[in-house]
Length: 62
View 1: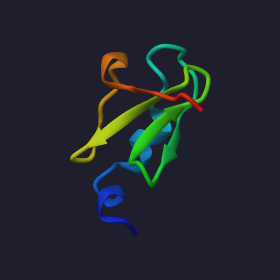
View 2: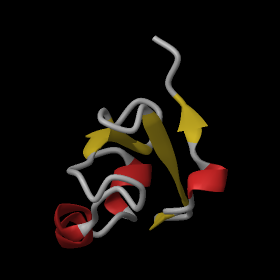
View 3: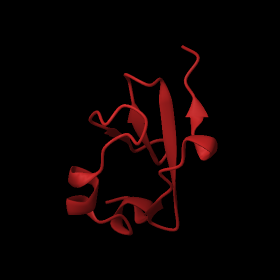
């Protein structure tokens, strides 16, 4: 298991939703982010803590 992932509480990830859309999030292991497809945003995980602020999220351009 990836060291970064081991710091993230899996049960917490299951409970979190996008603060903008209230929709489901998916975990992107490669980028260590929580992705909201509906909002086209990716929320970073820093030191095992999801940063659930729209102002901190990366816009998904693809």
